[in-house]
Image (cartoon, rainbow, N blue to C red; front, side, top):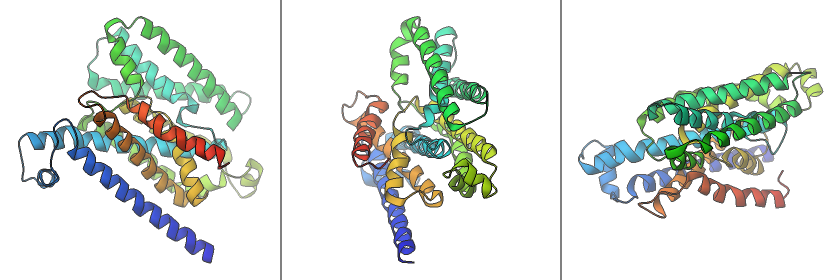
Length: 331
């Protein structure tokens, strides 16, 4: 009983602390920038009593960018949690199914070979990521679907997609600088249309993952044990991988290939709260949201008006955390 009460209190404090951190990041993201907006002006804009430049900065530029970043972070973190659980591989990440590389390849391909409006790029990213995931599933199913086969197939598809992306970049010409910046990950220019694109994917993915936490907990056991408890292991594994693929494809389509979030966030939460998916999934989503929004705030503020790649800061934040976890044998 004492342990149960302790874990419940720890879970509550984690949630409250992350919500406060996310709110503080939101306040800084809405007010800080090349043109700063005072706190009272931000509140007035959000309350609908202030117009003009402040309203444009807050409503049209900074608020949708912050929301998009939070959704990207939550999607990648939950996708990483699902992949690490179903593969029972602590080094698994959202890119293990080739989704990240497939989405990146699709966006680079359409930019190099066709003249398309920028609003269509996220859609092509989702298509490319989904196609790469399907190819991974087909390869992994040859001879029996297992976590090891899934990982190996994902490595092969990722290598192929990365090679094709590199080949397309060699012929990108005037698009080269823009494409390299996108491949580093970022939220520059993201607006309400991008929020509308990723929001249903994130909400649906989180809802499905939370509804299936009982089965997700069973998948942490050996397959024989899970089957003995009445589990349909292969069906559940495929279902959760499909959810992770959808979350990853939507996130990459909006923000580019952002690294480390799906790898580090699940480990950090597991270290604090253990392996019960009922408690860890909501916290993992919040950790991912905080990491991405904080990284984006640093990316656009440290060298303003110039903007640094988002992926640089997610690696700088996530890399040391992962090293600490490795040294502490949290894996």
